[in-house]
Amino acid sequence: MPFISSFILIFLLTGNLSAQTVYLKPEEALRLHFKDSAEVTPDKKILLESQTVDFKKKTGQAPPKTDWIFYVAKSGKNVDGYALIDNEIGKTEPITFMTVFSPKGEVIAVEVLVYRESVGSEVRQKSFLKQFLKKGARDVKPITGATLSSRALVKGVKRGEVLWKIFYGKN
Image (cartoon, rainbow, N blue to C red; front, side, top):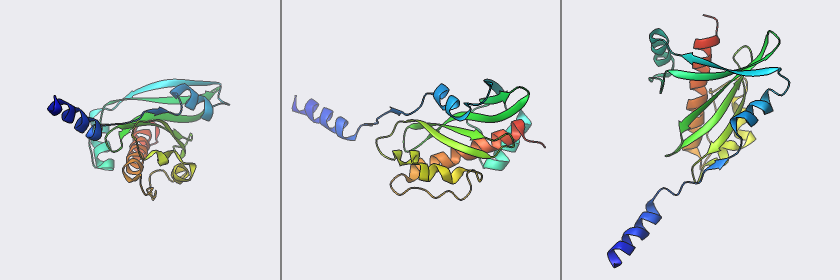
């Protein structure tokens, strides 16, 4: 019996004690950023083989999947913007976030929707997230104590930028 008790104690002390916090549901985040748009519709995109090669060239890695859903916000025939809801692994758990793009593909907002780690949630702070505005994933300074989460968001936003250019950018 002491062996089992010791095993349980060790498991509890070393096991993944992650805490999931939902900050925004996807529909809430979309409404927050596209409140003036007449409609926001999902637009499913699938990476073709040539696009996958382009993605690898621009990011240095293979895409984690081929199917992507962008949300397109419109008022009449005018596109108000785009959004991509994605996940990237922080230390051990996925961070769910949304990258919002202008009609020209500039990053205009990044929102953390769900954070699942027990530490590092500082990546939700406006001072960190505003670094992405208009410059995307370039030159973003990580947060001390949340370095892995910071890097994860940078990686995810960069992936979104590349995907936006592939699917909506002018070649």
